[in-house]
Length: 345
Image (cartoon, rainbow, N blue to C red; front, side, top):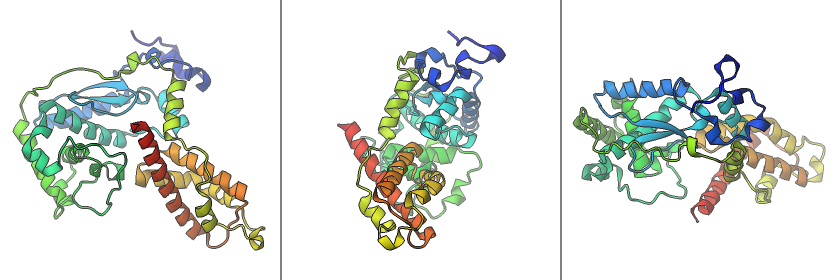
């Protein structure tokens, strides 16, 4: 059943206040890919597959996040990309909406289609696949420490995601191979990663024109069956990405700032952190792939500790900004590792 339309052909919830919208169940949004911006981007990806001679056509559906389920040759798209109002809500609640820009959406779609084509043709069962990427049965790490200077992996999504697991290595390599005008042969000349790209190129030529043996059109966790409210969804998401108040910052903050009496008339450390927080949050999120919501929670905690300790700025502000970025990155990685460990239990 389609969503009830209001004036202008928009669903009635599109103009609802955030408070009211958060009370709606996800299934009651009655979302459809048809006519959305993300559908146009999917069509571009399908055209890219066609131009490569691939008959494979994955199916897509709305769920609560980006993923391609094991043994399913399809891709789940987060529901907030279905409508600009939902995208704005995601940004309001989480400070970002992953895949909301055209370029970022296409990058993620190419990556997820890489997983989907692997599932469709059971590519990761092949000996040569394992030789180039590793064992797909290897357990996903709770967290990983990438090597930014490594040339064994392509660079596509943020956080050097190809280094997370063999499955991600393949999906990232496929995404680089699929992107039009990527010039991957010259871009990765001299890199060990080029061998993986050449293998993917040979592999895709081999299966070009073939019908995939796995053709299940299953939709895992579709938003149409999710009875949780938007408020409950974001409460859970914020709890996962959020930061519990803690005094673990004190040692680092006392090294960055000063509580000495001779500096008591200097600029408050909390004022400086609050001033640079938005830019710092975006920069670290860009380079690390960490959630902006997590970083905002950590910055809020840091500001609170600076106030509690009555810390002041002493020394070069540019140096302090740089070192604060390092401190924030370290604490973000520590928090994510602890959060992932709790989720795995």
